[in-house]
Length: 419
Image (cartoon, rainbow, N blue to C red; front, side):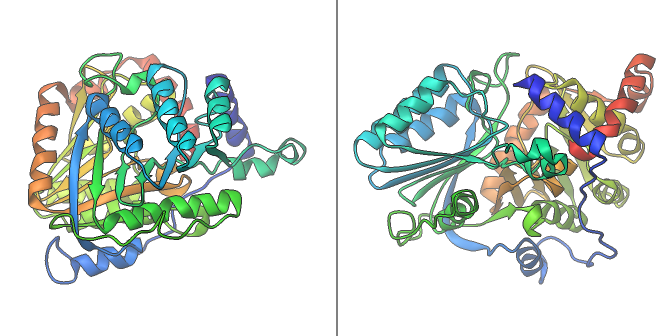
């Protein structure tokens, strides 16, 4: 599977494909929290901000998978699940059996997997779902015509990177988890990746379900509806939140605009955790300008990489940030896969989007945005704890990296638009 992914990237590189975000010439002069900020963010992300929600942070596989399994096993009407990576392993089979058991009980279970990320899922899992009555569909499967007409590979380049689980239309989960044993554990050892996800209840779950049914409709041509998927939702808490979803081929760049607007509006602090940190020129400039106007900008990236090419691209671009006053810290115990941001201690986002061109302009993504100081404080506490396990990167250390690494970065940068 990894060999196929490398070949796929090579085909795209040879084709000269360049997909980018739309040009932006001017930004509004707004500050986070002042009049006009929230309507502006809602308008440009095409996502209403709704109240009455309860949001729970889930840290690493030790918390994420038990919470999801409990919700799945409690389902009474429907389960919808969208995932980018589903591979082999103990947790993959445990999740699969939980879905299959609910299917055998007569519950409607719809599973949408990305055909590239989940292409190596074991056959026995697929057979189990089919035999139990679960409906498995594949996002953007490769077609024979793409070999005859290679330019059609551009369609295959469009990936579903969203992670969504909704149970009975009332309980939702999102974040960046994948279903492999690497995502189990506590995120503090090399074999177990560091991840942050969220569990939500309240009116915001309808927006999460809407993101799933949008992908399901475009994949299958079928429209999911009725109270099994969209029941009346009462307030479960006091948290304001929104679901920001991106689908660049459909003209939606919500995740990109979310990051850009929040960075430019920050007044005190921007704390980012992201595994693939190589933003475009506009977001790079926004982060450096924020640091110059006195905003404390801290970034946690992986010290341990999952892919050498993406690590090279990311590392090659750190120089301007380090010179511009942005602090970069490399997480040491495990691969850091959390995609989160906290702005001014009151605004926070957790989701699937990376700070790279693939998330901004190619992939389908989803982020939960929370406007609640209590939630932001919890996420901030986690950020500070991760800093203890991270090593700050200085410009001197970055600039003195081996020559062979710099040469490899030049080649890796040729594929930057596809990463």
